[in-house]
Length: 502
Image 1 (cartoon, one colour):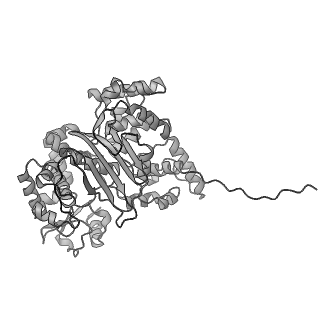
Image 2 (cartoon, rainbow, N blue to C red):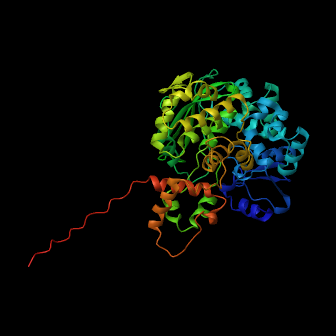
Image 3 (cartoon, rainbow, N blue to C red):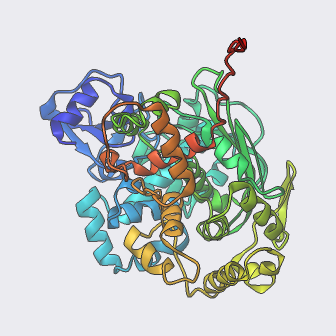
């Protein structure tokens, strides 16, 4: 978007762009989200920033009226496969908190100095400033949503000390943590929970939101590791500092249609990573209006978009687990894959934070390579391929994750036995959030095309690879999968009078 497109968006107070850019006003010294209800500033006084960190570094403070940090993130980090997008995915996952700037740079194949220069040029802020903005956003969420102690919030958000936490909150919000907490409308008085007890947070997202993603996850849920319904999903998860358990519930009948995240247990140091991965799992930073507008222009998808506006693309909370699931699930049905994964899950360790019927963790690569593969049934070639991939993951020979791009992912995965373009594409969709993957050879995709073609009687002959809806073909794939899985409407029998023989 150029300056005037963004200016028109803030003049219209278009909430769709909240989190995608920030508006700084020189005369007030504050920055806002695009939908801020305050009077639209003069264009001459406005500077737009790609990130809140860039606004911080330029000396601006967050608006107390619109709370620009309390918004969904930008979908640009998935659309962009450049260094800036890859870095932001890793920063949001807490890599700088765990490994520092040097660790982030090493994962991306750059020196810390090179990375700082690239991010400063592309996003207006270096990696430390971007990480600080992410910590401030996490801290604000915890302050206004939970009764946690301030010290616990400081360390859970990734700050190295309470003093650093206090200074940052004052610098960013021009308010102390205590004053910021007092502004929360729904803050409930009570005693602060100790580490590892339940936390409940509301997850912001852009409307519309199609809850079909819950059904997608539910039919693939592995008993003991996951549980799902058409409006809820829960699972155990292994994070850098320990086991975690969470659930997400959707209430379409409540005003605002909230998505509520309940964290049953987590090491507070892992909280930023957990929040980031849950948001990626449910694709909560997507821009559904832009996506639906592009998809609906294809006559094959028009009716599907009308029936399910706001389709989301499921992400992954564990890249290694997703590769294993993809390798087992290729070329078999969803039900058969779930049966095989349920057998494999017996190799997983018992969860240290059991609850809600969830008592196991998905097996690690080492557990699969050691003996877990023996639990599988089916072609020996497929089992051997899975064992080989698990061994490479366990040894560190194969390492991939949220910071990869599509060419890098292909280079790492395609040499593996039993891994082809479908597997790489599926992993790219769910791990990288790559929005423009089209799985042309997928049987369900072909069935979905036939199902939608039966509804589309026009003479238009669009391309078979859906290139017209690029860069959103991953979402087209989701619609095709749903069309393929939809129950077929039986054709009613017609009452035809019997012929009377002469």
